[in-house]
Image (cartoon, rainbow, N blue to C red; front, top):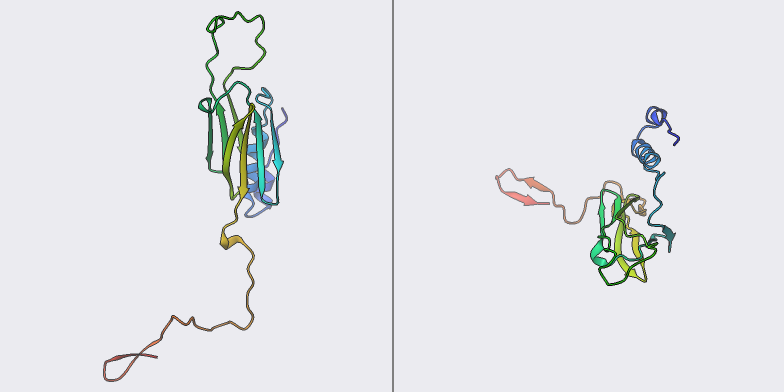
Length: 165
């Protein structure tokens, strides 16, 4: 496995430390071992995505999906069947019945909107939702220094009584 030194990014780019950390984490998490279970990632719209995992032999009770701090984790836990538990002696067992854990790094503001298990495919729907503060907004020209209507100035009269201006 090849390793990269991202230290120059920390020195050269101010404010990009999160991006450098993501690249560093991604390079360390490249799965060189197991490719199980296979999966697809698709963009289904401008701000929507779908992850599909092939989890043949797993039921809803055997799967756990968790999203925490921009990491989506999918775990599968399965107790292997004993050879004679259903009265059949298997000559070959090619359907994987092993536990797994897959992690996906999510971009900021990407949330899981739902999941479904059908025909051995676990489908996880995701959507990017930008907070209002991050969305572009128009700024009106000529509005500098104008007070809001709900703000009232309080002035003090020499008699000691307060009056709203």
